[in-house]
Structure formats: structure tokens, C-alpha cells
Image 1 (cartoon, rainbow, N blue to C red):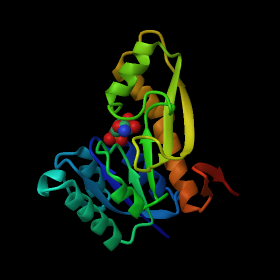
Image 2 (cartoon, helix red, strand yellow):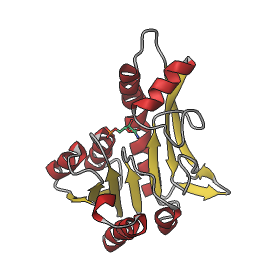
Image 3 (cartoon, rainbow, N blue to C red):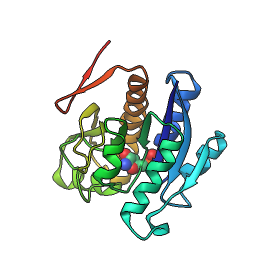
Length: 207
Ligand code: GRF
């Protein structure tokens, strides 16, 4: 059974969607550890309620990014995880970390990549930018993580309509409900079943 590790920074609704899919048996795996860079992230409470080990590992505890990433790598390797999910994780890690788990890290991003992604596009800022541009459709993307910001191979995307009168907050909620909480657990399920193959930076789904 696939051992899954998670990195989180915030409320953890995406983590919740994955925990629910594990509990219902949809995902053939087990979340073994949830790590936050923020001590007060509500995602840690959600994990504790599910009897999952939690840890706080932050850059602040180390004198360099290198040491921080060493600690994260050691944490996940010692727990033998086969997949790491970035479930609302707001830190960009270097190739040191991403190469240690190549094609074994999955991120959720709240836009249709390559729109509104990369450095500076996180949280509500993504939805603010979408509304400022006046796009009529936005959505979410699940992708493997490489050393760039939101540049890794795309696993799944789902479109969501922008509606008249949307605020960034309203749009964020609709994108989460209609797209993120649907495609993120689905991507983890496919990964756990060995159905995602990466070739030349393109994800192919095999049956
Ligand atoms: C989500 O919109 C996710 O796509 C983005 O940050 C938000 C985190 O929400 N990266 P949550 O912590 O999963 O509730």
C-alpha cells in the first residue's frame, strides 16, 4: 500500500479531501505524516483528528535552505513515503528536494496552468488576477512538482465558470468545491494505482 506524506501551510481542505478519499477506500494508500511550515496551520488539526502523525518543520529552525530541505528529505525518507502531496503548501522548494522525489510529488494549483501561475501566484492572488483579466473560465490543475514554480507535468485540470459579481473569495470557494477537491484526490488515486506515466514531461494515463 502506498505511503503518502503531505506538506501543508493552511486550512487543509485539500488535505481533508484526500483523507476522505483514503477513508472511503477510493485511494489505495495511507497518509503517514503531515508536515507544516506553519505551527498554527489548521491542516495539522485535521490530521490529528484522523490520527495521522504531524510535524512542524520550518525554514526558521535552520540556518540555511539547504539544511531545511535536508530535514524535510530525511523526514519523508525515514517514513518511506512513495508520494508527497503539496496540499496548500505555500513554500517553493529547490531542485534538491524535488529531485529527491522525482515524479513523486503532486501539487494542486487553483488556475488552469499555464494561466495565472508561477512566482507570486498563490492563494487569493491567483483569483484576483483572473478577475482582473476578465477571464470567463478558470479552474484548477494538478501536476507533478519539478524545480520550477508550477512548471511540472500536468496530471489533470478542471474548468470552472467565472460568474457575474464574483469576488476573489467567492471564486476561490467555487474553484475549490468544483475543481480542487475533485481532481486532487482523483490524481492521488490514479498515482496509487500506478496509472500515471511521465514521458518527456507529459503525463500519460494507462489502464
Ligand atoms: C488552495 O486553493 C490551493 O489550491 C492553494 O492554496 C489553497 C489551500 O487551501 N495552493 P487548503 O489549505 O487546502 O484549504
